[in-house]
Length: 439
Ligand SMILES: Nc1ncnc2c1ncn2[C@@H]1O[C@H](COP(=O)(O)OP(=O)(O)O)[C@@H](O)[C@H]1O
Ligand SMILES: [Mg+2]
Image (cartoon, rainbow, N blue to C red):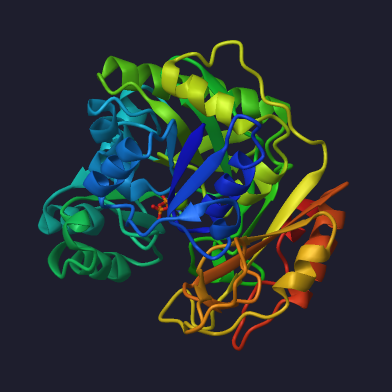
């Protein structure tokens, strides 16, 4: 069968890598992909938001299954369009993807269906939001958290330590429209203490099958300080998600959400991702995402023993019941190598060295994110792969160097051995990925 993967990050390279291991799959396309995906898939030059273009491609090329990586096409309704045309696609409908696309809708669902989460109010007027903070009338105290309602590329959440900061944040989101219409509404919620973790599961609308647990490192600097990024590294399993914690997450968060979404006429198929704050064994929802996390996907898929394709097909067809996923007992760690300047403005077009050496290492996979192939004016006649071509940086997060090891410590050591083989002018990475899991 033929599979189309949509997206161009490390998550999508990991998906291509995993899908390529399925005996059911003969050909993979990736739209638009990166230098790494071009090894397992044929990259095609269609943007993830060009839904019409993607649907036409899938139809013309008789694609059996389309897998959507990023949230944007999902919230734009790519699944609705494909289904209208009778094309099989893995992901939630536009209505279901609103669980990520609107934080106001997500909080409404959490409250209505009784999931543990921070107390909150939503606002569509900046004056009312400010009044709420000034008076603290309904019991909100600082620190507090302000969240833009819509998609803001991971930048729409501000933790405010003072009232003044909160007022400024409201102005910047709702008046100056720093995130455009994503800031038409906001959430103001209570600040929760604890340790963060991600919980992801396959869903067919009725049944959920959890993926291996994972934790990521969001901040740019060692010791989890500095501004938030898309994620500087991740590891799996997450020691904080014990069997007991997992059962609690399924019973108090995942199942109620699934039931709620069905009741609201938004039956949820695809990957359901809960961003959690865990304190003393109790999990609280920070947010829901409608797709796999990046970089958590990289170490999680590295540990997945089962073929992912039949699971995705079963999720699309409502047949997950009774299916099981086997995981490797080993641990996995992914260290993200980023461009100088990230998460602010960063450099592009730097030549990456050492990829071939890293490829020779055992227990290591280098997933590409922001990379591109420099095709010389007279390309050498090499079929497939990247042999002979230069690989350049083209994004903020450039590579996800991912290792498997007997335990987290071994996986950390192998991942950093890989990182040390790779270089470019201005490469930056954290030195403490996975340390959190060793405590
Ligand atoms: N209620 C909260 N209490 C403490 N920290 C929070 C809270 N909500 C969000 N955060 C922090 O802000 C980050 C981003 O918030 P999140 O809701 O995940 O939005 P997004 O991923 O869309 O930016 C979280 O990973 C967490 O570190
Ligand atoms: Mg988040």
